[in-house]
Amino acid sequence: MLNKHYPLYFLLPLLTLYLVFIILPSLIGIGYSFTDWTTYSDEVNFIGLENFQRIFSPKENYLAYIANTLIFTGLTIVLKTVIGVALAILLNEGVRRFVNLYRVIIYLPAVLPTLVVALIFRSILNPANGVFNGFLRSIGLDSLAWSWLVDPKIALYSVVGVDTWKGVGYITVILLAGLQTIPKDYYEAAEIDGAGFWARLRYVTLPMLLPAIVVVSVLNVLYGLRVFDVVYALTNGGPGYATEVIATEIFKAFSQGQYGLGTAVSSVMFVVLLVAGYFVIRLLERSSAQE
Image (cartoon, rainbow, N blue to C red; front, side):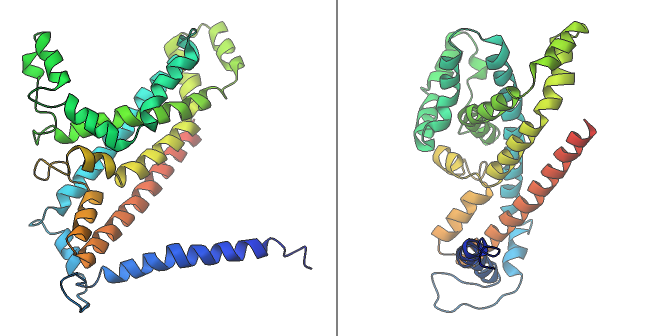
């Protein structure tokens, strides 16, 4: 009898810890999202849906923060996945010499601290004396020397570019591992049938790589919807509110002592994460089943 139920002795303490440190604080936080809890008052009053009405009100900027988060997530998913697939194929098939060196170079940005990357790119993308604009001017492309992190129209896309540069190496490693699990027999059979590179890519590589693409897509969705560090370090949500995302607004709400509002925004982010993750997984699973 003891041996039959022996695993429960390990499972119950883990479930208890998960309940105490994860589920219970989450429920308490959701409860506080319906209050006017601030650092300026000792009283905590129930106010119903007022915080959520404020978040979704057209008069406030919270809808713009949600939109920025979704744009950031969508663009980084596409860019990291496409570039990651291209680099993984290049490392797996196209590069024969110094392949390990190239792998290290591609993966290196992923291990660099975000603050270091942000400081470097803030200098590189400086509109007045940055290296990037200086290079563009030196080759006669003065019209492309923009205010990358200062212009509200392109600041968010500049942050997307920096984050893609930093994170694509990590995605490449996962996709490269997926490529190396594809049996060589499939490629040999395709070559015998006269399939070229693009035919092999469409009918062999991508279908067989789809499980790895599912993994990196889910990881990118979860990361993108809760992105904070690269945005805060590069622009602090500016200029104005051009690059403000949900996580930076949560940070600012708590920093200003608006705890009830901050927990309400956190609850919204949790729901967005849950819904987006669910639909991404279902969509990719359906694509995998069709293949």
